[in-house]
Length: 491
Image (cartoon, rainbow, N blue to C red; front, side):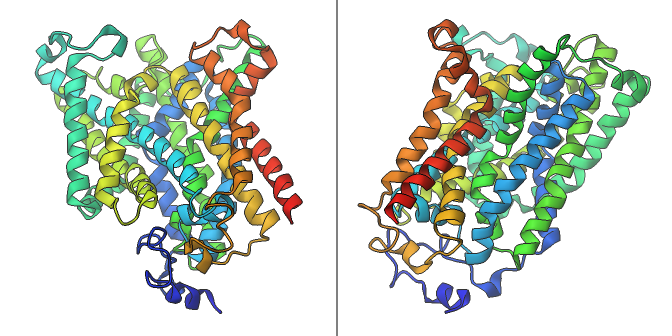
């Protein structure tokens, strides 16, 4: 039976209602229309966002010089390209999305575990992007209404949140929720705006930095702040893990996109051409501009919104902030609402639709205190990027080990939608996948707790806490190998 036949045969009548919906059904071959350049365009668009700029500038803020930062970003994106392509294979071959692909390894019910973990991380990114958009609104209002900065403090000091930015954050959050209410069709024009405007804005910022910083020479001659080799390596490895973690989310749910691929070659070549190149190129702009701020202002300003707020022209600041707000809104809905909304819908396809899933995403995005995560480069890399990579690395290791080493790339698509079948395991859960997931997460917990200050560094062995610097790699290989060993014993 061909894949087209299998796809057409699947329906609510011959699938379990709790596992099937039109959104989760396999894409038939006749509707797989994405070619190499569609995937290249996807990654160029995804890379052109404020967090990518902040990713690079945070490395400069952390002490790297320009070429160390660029090399770290290129290496990280080259590493994450591997699981991206490997997981994308199943989507292109069978036309299935990420939550359904996860059923093969975790079980038809157990797949909700990786889907929810992935969704929660996306909620975090939603919160961060919403804070960026809201803060852009605040900076725009501040140049016209300076008194907004003097509003009485209504939040406890432990929140680290001023009243003015809090108001614009909530307003921008409500705007995002309104777009969810209208549906994703309403965001198409904003995505077109982003595709045209952000590259122009980025280049304009680059030319400003080169001009104000007296040419590229002085900018790129800024030295590394690491005075010893040991100090550099101590920062490099967790930074590299953070770079991998930046796209660890998409390395799992990439089947959501590759399910539309015309051929395997299309998804492989499209991603290989665009992902490392576009991330490195746009990051270079962030590196140059951040390095220039030290020359221009005498301090390293790694947050582009804070930098834009220093411009003298009210009109220039307003145009920049409105543009950031609109492009952030477009990115947020496309990248951080659609996927988690579908992941939450997978919990109960008959009860949770896209809108409900979107509202759940919005609430969780508020509760993670995104303004704290990006308050400084250390928090952005060590607390956020590395922390969630310690959750997603193990999932990627399990799914890749299962698909390539246990099932040899062969899936029974029909039974992925059946409560009783090959992927039922015990009550719908594959205990070996869950055990492997826990084993991959546990080694990184001590390092995470010492990083956030929950426990004293001297309370755990030094080498154990240092494993956190390699969180994604540790989780990926520990979970992947233990899962493979346990599953092979059952064969």
